[in-house]
Amino acid sequence: MAGVSGEPGGSPGVSERREYLFKVLVIGELGVGKTSIIKRYVHQLFSQHYRATIGVDFALKVINWDNKTLVRLQLWDIAGQERFGNMTRVYYKEAVAAFVVFDVTRGSTFEAIAKWKTDLDSKVFLPNGGPIPAVLLANKCDQKKENNIQSPSHMDHFCKENGFAGWFETSAKDNVNIDEAARFLVENILTNSKNFPAEENNDGTIEINSEAMPAESKSQCC
Ligand code: GTP
Ligand code: MG
Image (cartoon, rainbow, N blue to C red; front, top):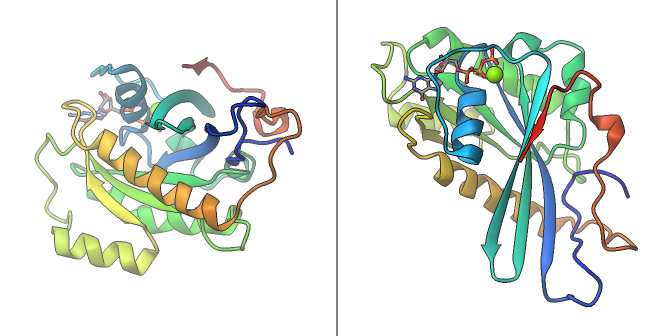
């Protein structure tokens, strides 16, 4: 089975150790901080300079989850300007989870969240046909919130209504809650992968499906 949907692998003979590769999407409006969150999480870097992502970009985060489990997160950083375009269907393929990001300083980016979530849920599914786990990130919490940004209790309600597993206030700039949000997402993915165990590869390796890697991808950083 090709793909990045989280099949357990690992070297033959090291049966105790489990390795997973999970494809995780990072989506949301233009300029909300998707690339910055990934850069902070993977490289511990932040830049004030805004360079819009074109198409999709990739990063790989390796997590020693516990002494028996290694998790590789392949983060798909999808340009905000892709807004529900036809390419998102290709990008979403075989994803097992998503971060949906908005910018607390721009209420319009929160208003677009429901549309991003609907787009996601219409294009990618778990093996049982259910939606993939999605975590909502209220980014730029180091800045003053715009007035129409909701209180924590409203956010809890919004998550329930729109099928988000949870939400976190984050700051890529000040490194707030990004590791915590990622840990929460991985817990959700691992729970799903226990419920729907995938086939183990015959040769014990995990392949990345080249079909699902769009030609216009610019870089793969790790
Ligand atoms: P697209 O690629 O166009 O979809 O945008 P993006 O969502 O990847 O946004 P990006 O990470 O490029 O960030 C946009 C701008 O917001 C940049 O100038 C960042 O420096 C800034 N930014 C991102 N995260 C934060 C944050 O947590 N706090 C503050 N103050 N600024 C941030
Ligand atoms: Mg970007």
